[in-house]
Image (tube, rainbow, N blue to C red; front, side, top):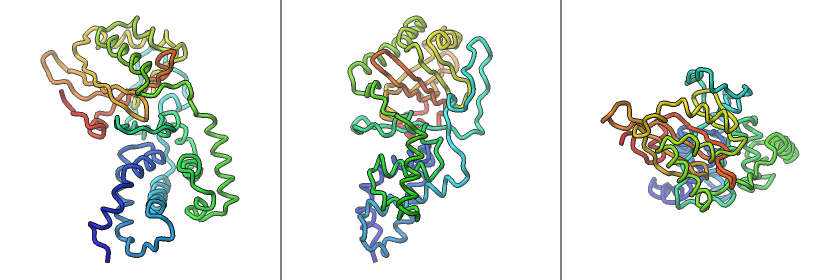
Length: 312
């Protein structure tokens, strides 16, 4: 019988990549962690029967993918506000109230030492995957991200190779081209400079400087608030109405990484002299022309996943 220590020693090196895989499937760092825990529990219980016909890594991916598919049986996807099919908001109108009953897409922490040359957790990709049925999602990830062979995917899903190829073709057609060749990586000097200028503009409540950093077709959204804005002028009007613009000392920032993109963590102070409370994780899509997309995930429960304190 294999000891727990033996199993842990052999399986733990794959924990991080399985977490990333489950996040791609589920769109939630919370759900991904729970599913990886379930995967390791199932694998430990079945490890004595593991015959080695595939690698341990492949075996763990099979268990994790099946666990994700089971979790997705309820058919609920995790969208972003701009993916709801609603029109952009009017910055002159009151902001819609948070829809906390909805399952929203969540950001995923990218450690500074982690370099994914293929950028396979970028927010645009994860958001697009949410629009695919679970099996199409699994096939696309396994074939195009993990580079599994068609027969391996077919075996996992208990379908034919022809059915696997059909699912892949439909998934690719739906997702389209998400290469985002114009998007700068977090370590790119241009991205670093843009984020630094953005932070200075926030800290100085300089709305004009903020607008100069946005592209003409920029998108700004803030789940769980369903309202979203597009275009430099509309975003500028919206941001100008925010309270922090007149009291910048009430905001603190940290530069972080999320979804293979630069990001900011925000803390807001509720009264003068009080503590700064976790407010949002803002993921930035930066191009050579400026910030193309800003998604502010206003969920303080995300902060521990990024190793960030709830208060400052």
